[in-house]
Length: 446
Ligand code: GAP
Image (cartoon, rainbow, N blue to C red; front, side, top):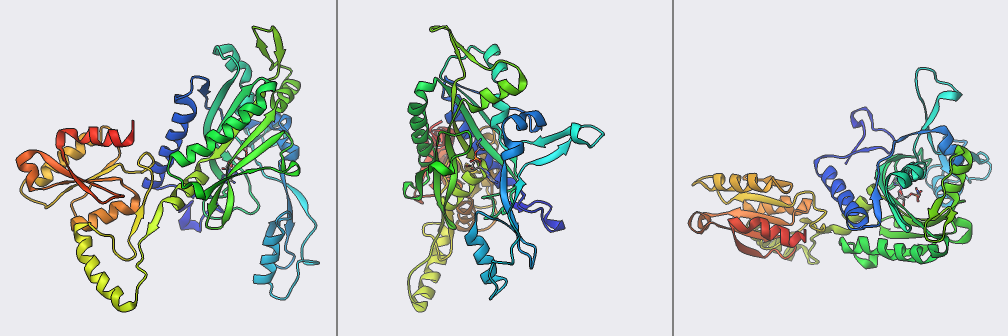
């Protein structure tokens, strides 16, 4: 990840994703879509617009209510959220030593987090629009279209992945809280009487999605919201929290939004947004259970959880000895040396699925390795690498979390096999060149 426009000093808490970052992000989104849409007969996907009419966000309550209380340090003009007193106290202790926040901080004022823009050539009140602060509203305003164009029967869900924007007062912690980010949200419409049951089901399902993709269960917990914490539309909410290096923090929220959104959009648009229940001939607004996750936060959690750095707990002398030994072993890739990094990402999330190496750059080995590489690029992101020792090439791939390294050696010329080295066990297996794809597929559980 790079700070956006880094050569100009960066754009406050906006990030660009490089070649590996974009792969990891795409894989996270693909796995979410697979679990939430592809494998669910009761969920459909949509893609609604980012630019949002003002009326939509007036009706949803965002224009009036999507605010944080903002205070400003009178000495250096740094801004804080008034509801984060620890951060403010920390600022005065570290930056203005000896001074207290009292008397040195402005009164709180409501600061709206939405990015405002203007549609068309005239920038005035009538042309005001917003960059959406959540994908959910795009689903609610399409409810009528979706009912009319598909034969959806309750309970059913509508899923979306897309960018959202919030002018956060205190962004930070790398990509944890940013001003431009991606959400993966699903609005699950249910009969009001079933809301509690589905709320519990989705809380459980969402927790398991992270552990199924390799997050260590001890680093994950569920935190139900206190009554006073609940958003204005929610009857209940639970956060899935991850133990980040900066403390337990929200990864995803699951909320019971009741019928707040459909009701308010019906009232403000004048278009009926009720569901007609054929068996009972009743018309009503369904309740909504919403699991709302962040792609970037999930990415940070997957990275932190997978990151491992090898360190020996030993004296300087034995350290030197072990380093010599390790540097020899590292050449063969059988042992990891001091300071070496391995990213134990779930293979489904790994940016690069396999790397192909010729053992040496001669005797037709590169040609065979290229052929294997070319074939595998039909199915996966693969890298070809012929530079440096095989041990060094293993290390490069371990650092980026590549689950399998495929080496073409002299035996390959005779028996058309290769070795496949597993990132986690470091075990090597001989596999027929014609079976490499089956090997990878079976491990990826495609
Ligand atoms: N539709 C409900 C909703 O938007 P939210 O808790 O405000 O709920 C859902 O956001 C998720 O979106 C969060 O759990 C988080 O993963 C992600 N998210 C929210 N604000 C973010 C920000 N400023 N930076 C990165 N991710 C953010």
